[in-house]
Length: 279
Picture 1 (cartoon, rainbow, N blue to C red):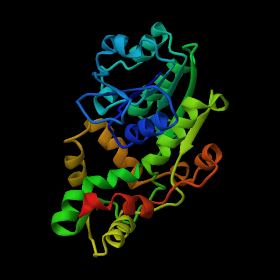
Picture 2: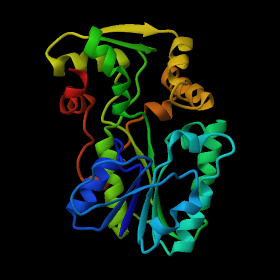
Picture 3: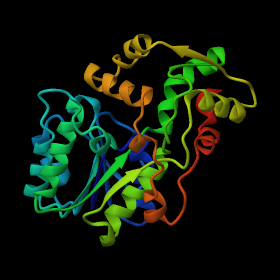
């Protein structure tokens, strides 16, 4: 049995589908009740209370670990989840980390994630670490304004990074959970090309068949919006990256191709597949 945390999100949902489609028993974990594929067990649990995961992890062979925003905040101790996995007899953990662990190792929010990576490496479990860069699905922050005003409002309109389709992250995660060849792998996951917010707005407009205007926010305006859904420290770190990416953050990684045997999907393809969110 494989436990998938964050199972109703942009990564967890396609990962759950892929594992169930491969004939594996899956326990999907989320904070709230949600629909899951037929045959998948769903459990409502809060990762901030690791001891509550004991019945979830009982009998599990593998765990996909995705941390919610509050588990990146000061005072959180997600390493306890690794400890519970060890006690439960889990064999393999695939951790969703972040590219910034490698590209901005001194940032306080990344030090905590690097520490969690180290805890996993030292746990005695089989492991793999996924380090994605920016997500194509972050464009869903613009869905309401596109629906109502046909406008994307974002900072740093002409500064781009190679954002990745979360479905590709899920596909790599499935490979790491199912294939022993990926044990001990650290995979940097990006899309196929650097794309700016202004270009993303154009791609959404193309998918809609209707032009979408771009409005550039100041950093302060963007920060105010972002801190409604994430810790301020994490918002600042994210804005540092999208506003001034370093060469490592502009690099297109070969790791999706290496694991999946195909190129990562483009932002335009993601927008076309998710166009209903913007209508």
